[in-house]
Length: 228
Ligand code: BV8
Ligand code: ZN
Image 1 (cartoon, protein in one colour):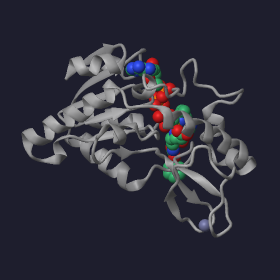
Image 2 (cartoon, rainbow, N blue to C red):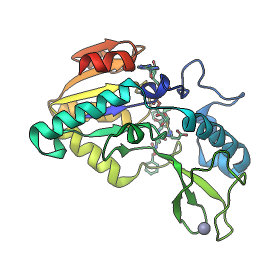
Image 3 (tube, rainbow, N blue to C red):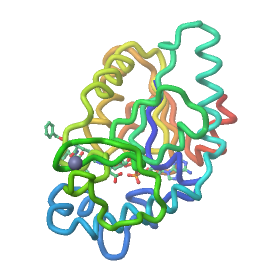
């Protein structure tokens, strides 16, 4: 079981949330990644996502993403049961998929998906920059990014599968996350209670370090290939 956060995409040039480059203009993600902010000012929120989409579009998966693809291939071939390896991410950048990871569980949605606030239609939108800001659905209503904002529930199916994988894990690998956002960060506790060993790979200390069996301090792009 692997849980990743923004740190695994940092070496691809994608800003993390809470790091030095994490803020945008004078707003914090916690202020912009909310339904309230979108309701008040959909244009401003979409300007933020348009900017992030333009950065993600230029980003390439890094050695950390690729090491997880190789780990998945080994685990899957070795046991010939795909369920022996589960990759869960809090990231919305889609870099795990572009690196070649299969069935990535996206707990916080996908920056390349949009959803109509009126009719609920969901579709892929890869326009960079967006042709219309904010974009509208063919039904006339506003489109929103199909990501999970603060105060919103996580997608039930992905969450359920992430909990099941955590309960069955022998090894729980947490990579590149400050582990402050719940319920995602709580998966490590689910794993430990079910008997998993916990390894944290992160550039800075996290609240999980105290209960981890191993803490690897450094850059995921450097440590994961060595770990592999
Ligand atoms: C929910 C999508 C309920 C949008 C995101 C008070 C106490 C506890 C909890 C709460 C509280 N008040 C509110 C809550 C709940 C809240 C929460 O946890 N808040 C936190 C901030 C306190 N959670 C929610 O609201 C969740 N929903 O609870 O709903 C509910 C239930 C039922 C019905 C209705 C409602 C929803 C949370 C999801 C929010 N959406 N993103 C978008 O991306 O635009 S969260 C956002 O944070 C991203 O998804 C991101 O992935 C996530 C976590 O951040 P990280 O990935 O960890 O990134 P960060 O920058 O923090 O850290 C990066 C780390 O990498 C650092 O440690 C750094 O050192 C390290 N690093 C950097 N470079 C490298 C590296 N490591 C290795 N190598 C490197 N090169
Ligand atoms: Zn619509």
